[in-house]
Image 1 (cartoon, rainbow, N blue to C red):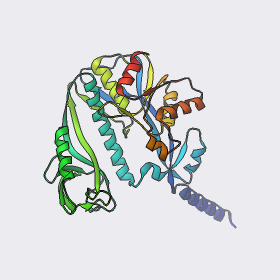
Image 2: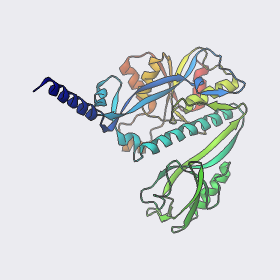
Image 3: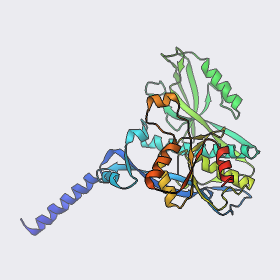
Image 4: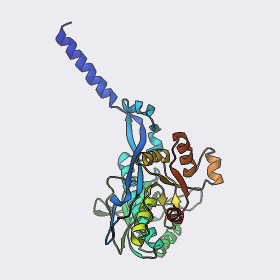
Length: 347
């Protein structure tokens, strides 16, 4: 065989191997992400974040696994997870839309909770109901899409108050199977009307909406809070966003020179909720030099423990991870925003 032919065959083999190496497999690789200062994500009018120290929001890096990157699972602090555990039944586009909405929702809640804790008020503007899922057997299956904003249901708006939203819930609970539900939906900046008959829920005998959603809202405040997500998505920065806003609008000096990392969702009642990948977020915090770590101390109910016997709270998980890493970072359990504020005030 001539030298030229050998070179051509070798080149072809290389190309084939390169193509094979890039073939995706049904897994994702999770690894420690970033531990960025929250003050980089938001700007509050009339306020300057000049206190020494930092509050850090943590991320997990997730990448699609391929034949080649499969071997990353053997690297330190990397984990291979089945794709369905991360994405569920959602397409990548739907999942990304959900993550972006979760970030917007977390920011809205952070402003509301921080201002309420500071004794200040905000104004809400409800855009509608963000569609988070469409059931497979729903009559809306081929009509609604994840990411749609439902502006009205049978001509009724969710409204800007909790009372108006409850009125809409009451209206829906009074409907019967076979009712034709008419939705005004915003998609890609265009509004359209969608309708379908409601099916019966075999378990209750009542209706099945056939889709799920959460309130999509904008919040305005004085002073105003502007966000730049820097490409970060998801709800897990809720606690740290809330702390940064509260710290600035009250001038509470919560950082007091400390390098503080933390994670957890925030609910409107101030409850701090469970998140995923906390062991990898701990690594990111340590690499950023954090000395304090705030971890959700979420409740594991008897029902949850019966279904998942090995399930631990986020606080238990991160304490276990810290012991394996041999770190001296101080980890504090947090159930509410009030807990977090009290912890930081007493450092």
